[in-house]
Amino acid sequence: MRKGKVALVTGAGSGIGRATALLLQEHGYAVVLTGRRLEALEETAGMAAEGGGKVLSISMDVADPDSVAAAFRKTRDDFGRLDLLFNNAGTSAPGVPMEELTPEQWQGVVNVNLSGAFYCAQQAILIMKGQNPQGGRIINNGSISAHAPRPHSAPYTATKHAITGLTKSISLDGRAHNIACGQIDIGNALTGRTERMEKGVPQADGGVKPEPLMTIDQVARAVLYMDSLPLETNVQFMTIMATKMPFVGRG
Image 1: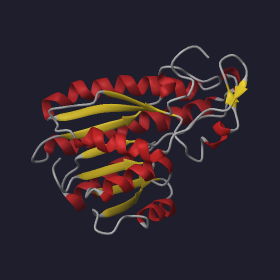
Image 2: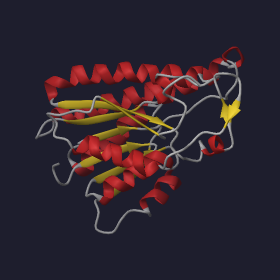
Image 3: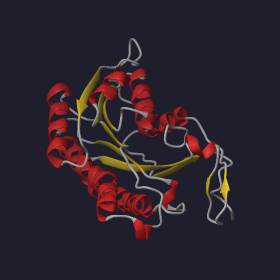
C-alpha cells in the first residue's frame, strides 16, 4: 500500500463513515471528511489519532452535484490527488408499505443513495484519471438488502440494487484509467440507526424478532483491507455481516 494516500469519505459524521475515516487516518491516510453537518464532521476530526494523516472537513450534500464538485475540487487543490473514495452516505424512507410512500420520500432516497454515489464517482474519476501516478479506488457501500430485502424497504432496496450496477459500470469504465471499483455489502452493523435490531425488527414471515449485530470497526477494517491491495487486484464484492443474522437460509 502506497504511503501518504488521500481518501475521501462521504457520510463521515457518524456511524460507519466515521469509523472508517478514523481508521484510515490512523493508518496514515490524509482523509477528507464530508457530510451535510459540519459540526458532526468536526467532531469526527476531533477523534483523529495523533501521528496519523491530515484531516480536512468539508460540508457537502451528495444529492447536489454542484456541492459535490466543489468538495472534490477542494480536495484536489489541498492534496493534489485522490486515491480512495468511500461512497458511504445513505438514507432510507419510513418503514411503511410502498403504496403509502410519497413521491418525495422515494425521490429523497434515490437522490442520496444512487444519484449521490454517481456524482461522487464522477468527480473521483476525473481526478484519478488525470493524476500521476494515474488511478485510484472507489468503494461503494452497498447492502445485504440488495440481495435479500426487508419488509417495507422498497426505496432503499431498489437503490442498493442500482449501486451494484453502478459498481460494475465503474469497474468496467475505470479499467482504462487504472481505477478499481468494489462494493461492500454490510449486514447488521451496530449504529444509531440499527440499535432497534436488538429489541426486534419485522421479518419476512410477518413476525418481529431481535437480530444479532456486529461492531462497525469490523466494517472499517474491511474497507481498509480492500484498499490495501495493489490496483492490479480488486475485491469486486465483499459481504460482511453479523454471523448469525437471518440472511443465509430460510427465515
